[in-house]
Image 1 (cartoon, rainbow, N blue to C red):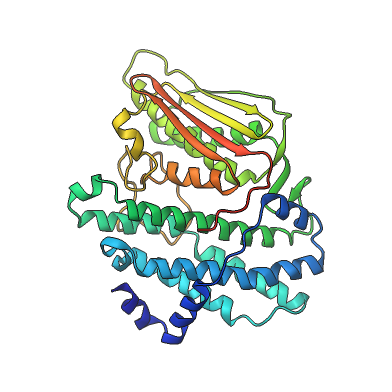
Image 2 (tube, rainbow, N blue to C red; image 1 turned 90 degrees about the vertical axis):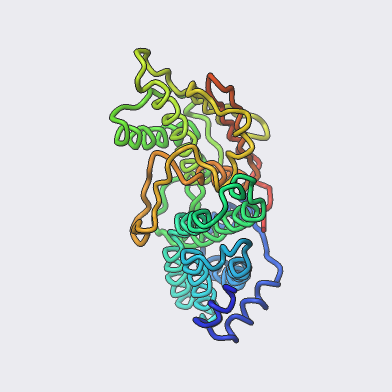
Length: 369
């Protein structure tokens, strides 16, 4: 059992403490609260924020460490998953060994430490993907095709929690910037233009497509660039990039050997009272109806797997044109984190529309798996 393996590396008292903290109640925050609290990053507020994180982060990290010990089908014993488990236990230990935060110096030291924790966990997503690949290799292919519901549900909880942990750490660290850009409160842009962010994400996605195929379809964006609302630009950038990258690949591959000019991808940004919705439409041939239920699972990709056992995951974030089936499910989690959602509607033989809904109200509580 993976627990034994973990216990060989870590003392029994540490593992017991993880189980104790993992049973404590988590405390969620809203986008609106983060904005209001962060709008005055005084020493006192930063101290309060650090004291909150000093108690909250070990609870969230302990929950994930416990779940990593008892995954179905022997996933907990895969080398990549054991490595991720070690990162979580190390981070829990670092947080628990840190003394009470009583003054500005303690707070600054704590901020440096959580910054290091965030870096330690940079490659959790590709490492977990590798663990799932290691599992799939040894499994009966019939089992893999019948959705491994427990593993999908675990990964949804695991990644949703990771988004929350990284948001809380990133927000706290960013509030220390002595010269924040205008309209910025930590990670939050109070006047973010979704059209501008979509434009940047499209440029990045087209550059990846160009590098991969030598050419890329055009992208047309419709919407008012002067319309703004408060959101986290890095989250929106990631979501639009993933959706556009999928569309570019589908269109490129459909029209690669054709005499016809590849039709452009269309992005429409609409601002409603409750939601801002971004629609990404392509004519890349669509997804068969039988495949639609699987597009939000972590074991499904329409493309070759870019990760192998020998990938160097120690450095940088790398981007490929197609994924390990992680783009869409993680995109949807980012949307849901602040009360939005992602829907995919497809017409086989024609193309796919992705509807990304972002909540304008900023009042929904973090989902706390």
